[in-house]
Amino acid sequence: MAISVRLSAQDEQLFKSYAKTNNISLSELFRSAVLEKIEDEYDLAVYRESLEEYNKNPISYSHDEVCRMLGID
Image (cartoon, rainbow, N blue to C red; front, side, top):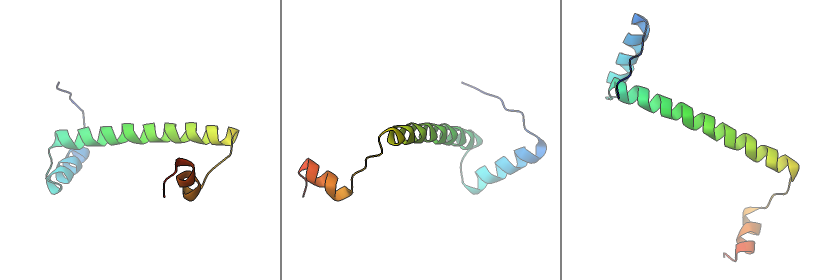
């Protein structure tokens, strides 16, 4: 799949310079940046959901308590 992106000359130079410095292609730069953005948003959504669940039932267990509950020494 091919995708085109319109960039200002300044942005194009910045992106090319960054890609060259990191020895990656522009395609890899854009791909990894978009995937990282998606992952960050997913992590934030999971965090918010977990916080909401915790606020409804604010019980937590220490590492030692969980190990005892699971029978792990």
